[in-house]
Image 1 (tube, rainbow, N blue to C red):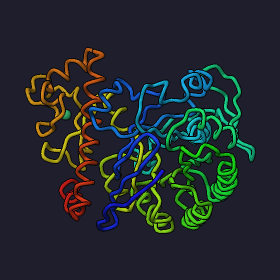
Image 2 (cartoon, rainbow, N blue to C red):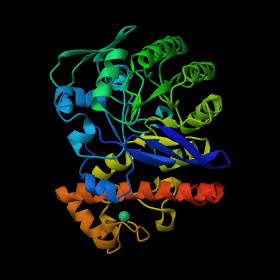
Image 3 (tube, rainbow, N blue to C red):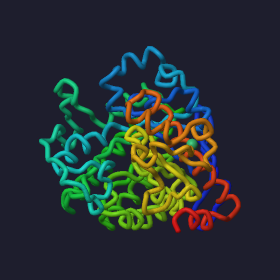
Image 4 (cartoon, protein in one colour):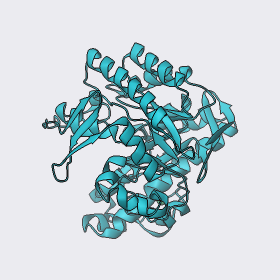
Length: 396
Ligand SMILES: [Zn+2]
């Protein structure tokens, strides 16, 4: 992997990440294809949308279809017939979402910032994962079988999956974990990072180290320093980003300046419109998020500022609202995607209400297009030294 920064403007940077399966122009949004598929879209559509890379979850693939099947195809690229860059995670995140996340009744992404959560209190559930120094023992959410994942095992699996960018095995804490717990988790993450680095043999893949530390300044800084000292080809920032959006901004400001400026920086699990601007402004190059695809399936469709998208409506409309029943306009009249060039809100409202399968594809297509176009605008604006202006036009 090779990373070149092509331009910088007010902290934001544009670059080119050269991987074994082609280039990624940054800053880049990385859609999530949890089970080796970006839900409802074909590879051809992903390509047409300008998706440069997507993210596959190791935990899900190792359970179904299982690593043996992927090995028959010499990796995910062959299995999926996708000849472009891919990223995988270590499986460690699931220790959080299936273990601690359930114990504390918060997920990392669904209630990303618990301080901003206004809905009913999340349900508490017994943890499905146990963490100790050797690794994480899960009870499979499928059949209750016990699975132990260690740092070395995670690297072996990710080598077999063959993604271009892979992640070190880490322990992700809940936004509600206390200082003492996070301190231990950070120390464990650092020991595991060293084990991963030693275990990793496949040089065509770039192994990223992961910085943890929740919203504790000294732990985040210590984590940034230790992970940097291990000299991974790239760095990722993971874990809890605090209780509200401002906490994430502070965390990035503590961490990013301590990372090697020449190396790519990935932010795990972040990707709402305002968060994307906040992250790019603070020097993040890539980020993955389920928002555009998951929202599409629940009828939340993104719109640009020209079409009325702003902070208050989170740049989106809820297509099942009765006011769209007779609306002849497309989702976003200023969007150039094939969905907006062909179909009305009234038609999409109807498809959504009837749970027609086509809805999921059309909605996901538009939402992914929205984020791809937003990133393209960001890259152009950085090159033109106009990132701050673009940001103002979206966040005003
Ligand atoms: Zn569109």
